[in-house]
Image (cartoon, rainbow, N blue to C red; front, top):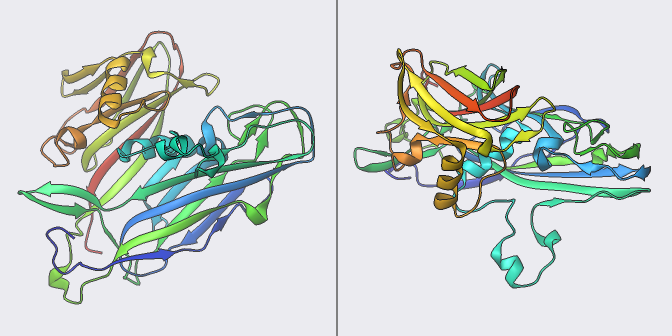
Length: 362
């Protein structure tokens, strides 16, 4: 690893699959194996839905694959300190943000060039039909713990988590929605007239692969373990075409992403944002942007459109993967995100804060 000569061996370890616990969904948890310095969790959701009959076909969830199937995805240290806490739709949105090289939503050019069927891609979300049938829902995603950062002209990684410590457990908890709900979007399939559309628990799961570094023999060669990489989602109800969210005072803010849901929990396109403002102190406002400008920036930088509704302030990217433009929430008094809408009078703004927080010795 850059700047850390003692960390040289990368290992990939498969964890046990996290199966959906019941035909109606539910909560499943798993402690990661105690080994190495955790760099990334790479995951693949696969769901099978069996429908005994339907006179009118249901629809795919308006929140998409992960948004419909998963209510919450959490990674906690000792069951108390959250490192990752995202809704299913937040998990999909965050994966689009952190991966500038590609998107599970976009058909890879290689598939189009070779005239292969869409089902050969990793992302499959079957369109429902009537009668007795089986649907498939799959989606790849990942969570990065080690974050490349430029410090004093050298590239290193902050946020690596030491698992080779018997005092620390790292637990993954997934809350699955039902496979079908009559009123969406919190189910993989919604509406229609479905009968007994349920998860097939024996073949519905999240598979996890852990990417890690071996721990150096000499503690002097340990990488910087004084920071944890945290990705936390908050919900902020609003009325009057205006939302104000007070940013928690914790750590260095790398990114702030927003997804707005209307009163029916449907995603509001970012074009409805007349301005999103970054405000602190009495009324200092260094950033004030309309939704179209954030969408335009995303398309120029990622070479694809963002998911519907995503609005993003990316201080990490603006600082060229350094810390010179990130925001220290401990030093900025009265820090808040203020959003004004043109056509959405009331709803819920889901706000994802990507940050580095200092931690005690692990």
